[in-house]
Amino acid sequence: MTTVLSNMLSNTSSNTLSNTLSSATSTAPSNALHTNSLHTNSLQTNSLHTNSLHTNAQKVPVITRVSDDIGGCAFFELVTTANHCRLLVKLEQNNPTGSVKIRMAKQMVDEAESSGLLKPGGWIVESTSGNTGVALALIAAERGYRFTAVVDNHAAQDKIRMMRALGAEVICISAAGDEELATAARDETAAELAKNYGAVWTAQHHNPANSRGYYPMAEEIYATLGDGLTHLVGAVGTGGSLCGTAKALKHKGARPQIIGVEPEGSIIFGGPGKAYLQSGTGTPEGAEIGQLIEYDLIDKGLKVTDQYAFLTARILAKRKGLMVGGSAGGVIYQALLELSRAPANSNIVVVICDAGEKYLDTVYNDEWMKKHSLLDDSVTAEIESLLDALERPDQECAAEIHYPELSAIPIFPLAKA
Ligand SMILES: Cc1ncc(COP(=O)(O)O)c(C=O)c1O
Image (cartoon, rainbow, N blue to C red; front, top):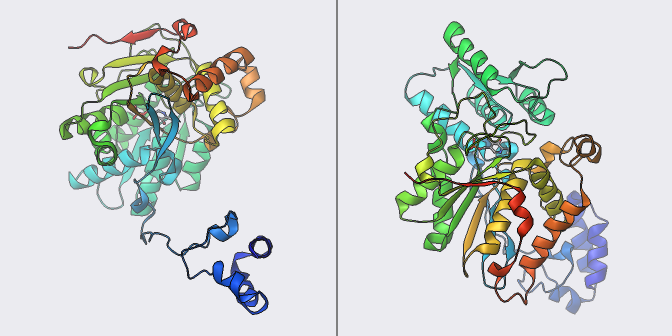
């Protein structure tokens, strides 16, 4: 009966589902139907279709604005080692607009409104590599503001398309074909629109509301793990997500090690600067390091190459079904290394900035990866073997994993103030 029912369900579109179920009632042997009854909680079948009809589902909220759906993103236990260390990925890409940045965009607008800076019908401008712009576009659409995003060609095209879809005006300051990150030039344009034309520049690199936007995420992490949280690992661009979360966690009494990750070529944890392709993260040479990066909150600053970041992201998609953005790939790579050295029972939380769907033209595109000489079977095998070693159930102590190749990537432990 189970097979009959699941075959029927798989051949049935959802709007005719209840009709099919009632006809099943009249034709099926009664005892079989009783076992699979939708009114009992005893649905013990392996069929995905029948399981999806379980009636003890949890209630879900009814929301009136898309931004009401911010937060509550699950932790995905990516790896558990034999010595009970866990790598928990906070799936912040499941927020509206597909990134963690919606948290800070909402907070920056809330605070601009409450300080009186932003008036009804007002105009918001931001210099953005993408996710902040998409998030501000959503908040502006909900509240009836005009929003202008100042971008460069470094931004993922899908993020720009999303901003436009949400009603934003997009000003691209790069010349055609120039893919360089141009944070400083973008900021100048945004500042000029604010100074000369009356727009409100949310200035994400200097705006403390950016950091404050992550306090609720810290609450979620603390509520789930409490003092069991041993490490927090995140990308650093403006520093808002990592430092805001770290600050709130420490305020609650948690004492995790705070680890920041930037692209190799970014200058936040030291030079030399050079071009990099990880989008949305780091600070390129020539741009000002944002005031929200609180070095005394960060225990360790690490760098990751584009190659390790992107190949890690691609491996996770194939191996776990988890599609993350390029910066998240780099953060997870460094977190995996950290996991290999962590004492037993560690809980390492990684904050994912965004999902892989925005990078189908780049990170997940073989031709683009080849064009930038980023595909390398030996590096892929190296990352795979790191995952294999961490996941080996007979590993006496994961901390014994020897991983010398990583020394090719410089690490900058910061001098504590
Ligand atoms: C994809 C991506 N990764 C990392 C970051 C860096 O986050 P933060 O600015 O909070 O340091 C951003 C910020 O926009 C981002 O969009």
